[in-house]
Image 1 (cartoon, rainbow, N blue to C red):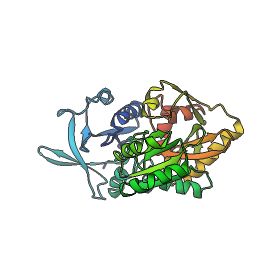
Image 2 (cartoon, helix red, strand yellow):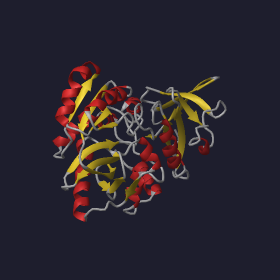
Image 3 (cartoon, rainbow, N blue to C red):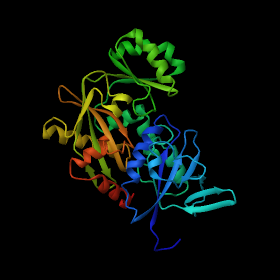
Image 4 (tube, helix red, strand yellow):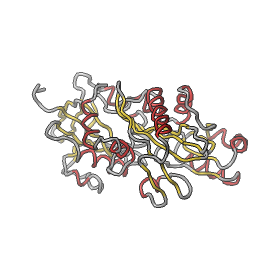
Length: 350
């Protein structure tokens, strides 16, 4: 490798996930704001079946999901050769090696945000810009994340995790103990997929079956009365926190449709709370970020009750990255632009 060449940054988009379409939008925003004078950007698209491709077409085709064409894509695999720390291009006339300096996965949900892709990259000794394998897996598992957040001194909702075998025997008893309304969620899924707000026992079994269509384990969780707040965290050693935001709901909960349409909800940045309470939420977010082993960036979501108590909800290790997404807007509110976020991430040392 030439010493004077630009650093190669691989941006991964798409993914074998129910959040494939969201990843395309986030990745397009990231790609079009990266400094191409400073970095050589390598685009790696992962289709819905899990096939990896080096994408050499126009970035505009990514959000429209018209990127996967024979002329623009070369099949690739990550090489386990630690001396290469790169990818192998599977061309018709043979295999070509392409070393990578760093990888920035912009993949949401299962098979992207859960540590699987991070593990592949770490095995190849390709530095990952973002949470590592362990942290990604821990944050994706709601039960484990809640246990660790509790160890950090942050309140967590009461919950029970069940398998399919246990579902018939224990679900009604757990529902009765937690009280209604409650939430039924897949243990490891993102963007509110498979989540149901259950208001009475008669709705519980159907909600559990729905959640099992997304994962082999399901969590029943008490509903915290109040509203959701979030905090963007950026950094490895020294942390930068964004302004706390607040989700105002007119009905129901912040499900997948609401997250990406805001039909009946609003996001307030900064949140309509006191400075003292905002600082308390930011401090809780940093505790959780450190306690769950996060690095580079993550969005920590919490609940604020009517009594002013803070409860942990979840950590998004690869939050939405579009111009209207919560993570960049929280940092924008403290004077950090989209371009500056990306610049800091690419320069950051793990």
